[in-house]
Length: 461
Picture 1 (tube, rainbow, N blue to C red):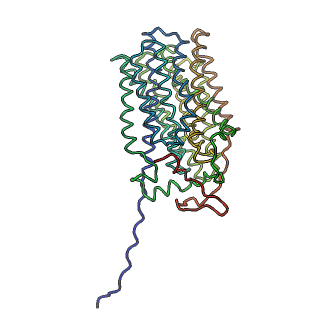
Picture 2: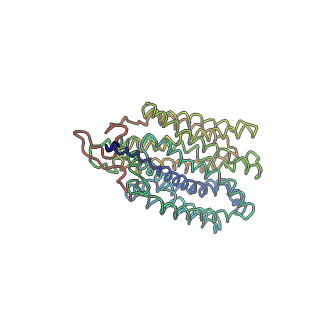
Picture 3: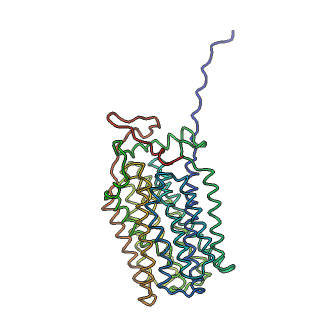
């Protein structure tokens, strides 16, 4: 006789977590790549442009710096706009704006028009880093943010690396004006992709419940306030805002060299031919790509191993900046082969610190609603360094008859000052656990706590 007992239904297999957050951060990286390709194009094309317009070194420094005037000025407003309207709206507007001004550079008739076009470019690119930081804080749990930040931050090394062979090749074969037309057109394609793919996690059709729970799993740790809205103006009174700003000022004083005077240094001071520069000039940026990712992995692994956030974020920052100070040895190196090793190590170490630095606004922000604003303040500091550095180098070259000795030595000193600020002033406070590590989106507040807005609900659609 057959056994007619009803067998229990098999337990449904747990749904596989979607991985849409990695696609989102890849688009952020692509946006930053395009931004750096656009901004670095002038420094690479400057030797060709200077021949046409007969631009002196001092004026070249002003020209290279002009981008950062508006880029710095619009950092803080960009952060506020991102917190209010979200990256889905602000990011593509920014890319469209800067692509237009990049293309307009092709019709420049002299220094004045070049500066005007660079000012327009700076306005458009101002939201890019605050937007990427906002995206990561929205789409990733805390334990993945340094690595995610390293992925989008690769865009600056990729863009800088691509700018050297691309701009040099186009300038040689078609003229420098065509480089700006072609590069400007690339941003328009990015806009189409971003509008098609970007949504807030809870509104994205390709994000399942498992990925959403993972994204929110430790974002509850970011809640430090009692439910009262954190006013924007309180950031100005928070000494951590100024610590992040000044730390980035001194870091950028060194990093701006690679974005501005680096091509001229190799071509004019060290005697590289255009062919040699085209072959090896991109090495620091290429090695920096891997170094950026490595810094993010190391920071997140340290956090996952149980080390405090203060240690996990600061060790890559301080060690990277201290090693980056080796740029100060460059003027004393006679061999160009050894020089490229020194410059590559300096650039790579500088990049190694980047991911952990970019994760700091989300770590020290008084509330999730102010991450974009705090990132705007931090990146404002970056642009002060970027603004001052090329002008100071240009004046130093004019005063010294073309010697790069003091600019490179002072770049090394600025790396050490930045390391000291991050090590001694920045405080990544331990945050309260509002739930277990794997708490899902429905985990409620603890007794006595007021419910606070989700970081996924601010400025997103």
